[in-house]
Length: 487
Image 1 (cartoon, rainbow, N blue to C red):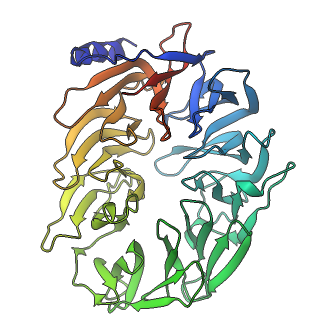
Image 2 (image 1 turned 120 degrees about the vertical axis):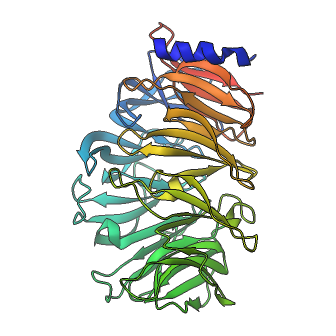
Image 3 (image 1 turned 180 degrees about the vertical axis):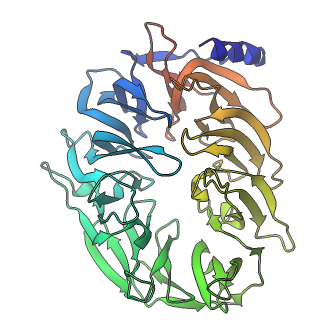
């Protein structure tokens, strides 16, 4: 802790929080998640710290206001509530080191728990990653044949809607069996009511599937069996879905029903696409199979001239429609040793705007690398990202004039405090414990303010009152989960 304490003293001159933290659960517990109503905590005891910054231990839920914990699983990596009160988590987990470079991946059975269910319900057997709707009601995942990231590994693509769960069982919605990771793409509506999945055929000339799941009814509708279905997209309100199929077609359709609208690019090949809004898209296009890609805009008005030559990845944020979707984030290259892409941004709303370089090596896909403040005015991201340790150098930038400011180096955890542009992060995390200095930054030009020392992780639920929940590990008897009011 000497390094952490030294940094804390160096920045303490900026002032400390006037709101006193309060311990809510001891036993050296590690915070996993907080329900959006701040009534329930998910936490890990007897936890082991992973190189990625995650933890594996005994998972329990406990009333935030005090009460006995309820153990859910003896070996779990924790879970998520998102902006809801439904907990999704992996249990009975194993840690597999795989890939190049070798990264620790956690596999386990996927469970769902809510206060009304009592006991958790298993919904998947061999799961690594799972996508949960913003409101926490729906989870989509691949249930794998084996715990491996081998490209030939196959699985079953499944979605579960938590309101369908009762009496020890849920009603899973199965989209397809025996498919690989490269065959599938999906989107989940923010309210969990719709899931769109695209499934490529075994080869690029085989018929694919575009499937729309209506989670409240449990019905799956086949929207298309076109060749090479790919690039699933959905508007934030779930009213419109879109996808790419054939050589160069972008299809969109209302989820309420109706004939699809087809936009055909003038370029003969479209690799992928991202939605700006229900009627316009950025597509990655090629003039021939071996030629360099270009990023262009496609709408009913036609295909624009090239916006970005040689774009490799693309991302348009739907976090705040009409605000964040004016920015095209893209990658031009990858770092050979780690496979990490670089990061650029282009203002789509300003004619003649030029791309701005943001970072040399970020998380992949790049949609995971950038987060907006709630008002869409600022972004935070990691540069020099290490996929093995999942640490990087934290930067903050006002998106309208994206001149980046270095916040801290070697960071695991950083996030905007909900409803603000204030950044909360853990500086100088110890590689062995993850503990560092919980720090708040008001703006790129402000001095950092110390919130706590020996902090492993934190969470800021979006429903008031404003609190930061965090793990304190300093080696003291009061190590555990704490809470601190936010001004």
